[in-house]
Image (tube, rainbow, N blue to C red; front, side, top):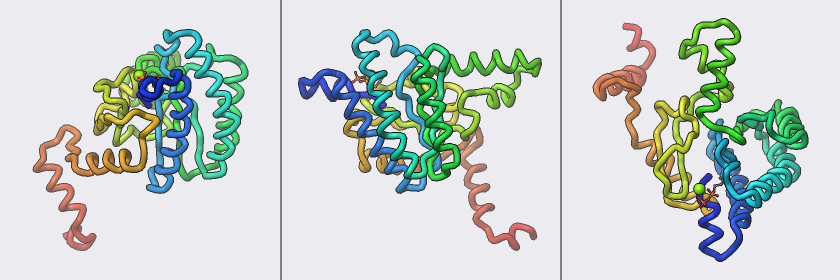
Length: 235
Ligand code: IPE
Ligand code: MG
């Protein structure tokens, strides 16, 4: 969710005003995903590296987080959103940790949309903590065991990864899980990200051929085989 600071700067507003608008954009995006029956949305809210921002901005972001936990979560719960907070928690305050745990508990039975909020998250942190977990359990360090120990093991790898704000990099987001994700880079600053932006990303995604290492001919053959009626397939 990149571009909050630039959105504010363009309007001669403090950066925090952009982050506030970013919360509105997230609420809108959750709604759009529900409307489109998208089952999982994972957003990058605060990275392991964002601690390096000016202290004033970091504390402003945490105030906004507290506000969002009290104001946004109940409404999301009503809409059938199941929340997961993904990231390193032990270095966060007791208050934030409790807020995360309560939001997760209160929405645990919801099934409409799984919303993963990556907070104090980094892709490298996730891979390292997963490897440490597997090693501590005495299991071999296989791809399957690492995948199962990742902080996002409860959802499939993302099909589509959208980065807003015109930056062309992953910045330590979903490094393991994005191996075969289709990437869309949107010039829109996150506070402005709307239905048209989401739909244009989905349209771009729908035009991609996903080969997962295979040839185009193989993919086409499989697609036409699965389109055949059951009886014809058996013959
Ligand atoms: C992303 O917006 C939000 C967070 C990292 C919390 P930025 O704050 O990175 O916005 P720009 O890149 O300065 O525009
Ligand atoms: Mg940025």
